[in-house]
Image 1: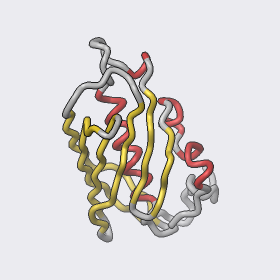
Image 2 (image 1 turned 90 degrees about the horizontal axis):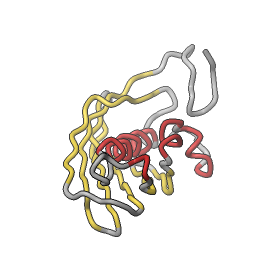
Image 3 (image 1 turned 135 degrees about the vertical axis):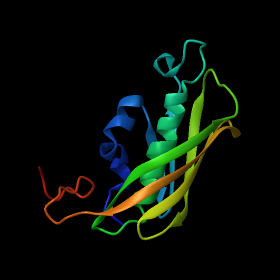
Amino acid sequence: MPRIDNKKLEEYDPYGKYTGLTFTKWEKGYSQCVLELNGNLLNPYGTAHGGATFTMADSGMGFALVSCLEEDEQCATIETKIVYLRAVEAGTLVCDTRVIHKGRTMAALESEIRRDGQLIAKALGTWSILRRRAREADVLTGKGGR
């Protein structure tokens, strides 16, 4: 598993940090992140924007899969399908993500996004697993550079 300081998870996800996403748990094959809904994350109808919910699933999948990778591997989203089950106007969203299967070159993951324990969206993603070249930067461990 790449060496990442659990207390500084947000430093490894600048986009998530920009949106207000915070990782609260990170273990091998699992991640949990939370997002407090605010006016910037709502659609014109006053409910959570689908992109905010999708960001939780995508970032959660990345963190869950990274926890299973070798030092010379990296990952990238191939595709993600998300089903929005109910609209929410306010509150804290919690996304739990698990690695369903990890092969040599691809992985399957699932995310469940809840508010107050109630399922509001579910996502299924397929990710590519790639080998890094020695000269490429390792953003997660701070080795290398551009």
